[in-house]
Length: 241
Image 1 (tube, rainbow, N blue to C red):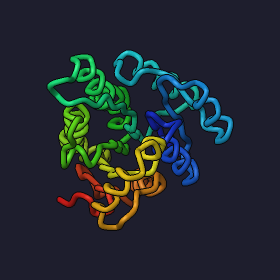
Image 2: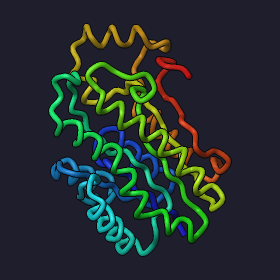
Image 3: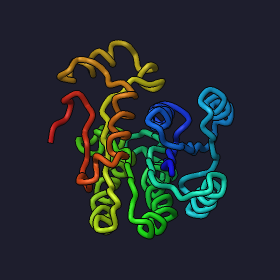
Image 4: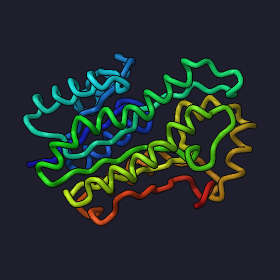
């Protein structure tokens, strides 16, 4: 049976690229999104990948959304990519409480919510691949992103603990920490600022979404079965550990 992958935040940006690369690799793919119906409809029309709308910050909505996918495809989810995330940047001394909680809920709580909904099925069948998208700012920190850096760093600890819990059940759990990747967000950065950022990157360019997506495809494959609890940094040498 062809394996089924779910990508959260999977209809735009890096998430859309991950969805398309998994489809190209031969997987069945379902993409989650939260708000942008127009973008999701265009994505589905162009790719044939069905999009499912729910808030990953809600445990109840994750359980229901994943159950809907299982019913539609007639099978359990084999590969989960936790990609959904938001930013609400501000210096901590100016940060509203709601900005802290919104980012922690969407970026970190979502990993618990989705994994909680799929892990029992994966353990039962003795196979699973969970790939959590973290960030270079989890590893290095970033001014104005205490909320985002904390959430993305939490993902790294979550990944290691969940990997240990499930390694003997044929389930691998890994994280990817992208650096600066070309996107709508980086396109909006003033040229002088972006030039200064690129000057700090040893390979002297931004990353491509496809470079992150191809790493996800590898970690989803049978060939990655002896890799678990790890963080793969894709940042052009910008931050090395």
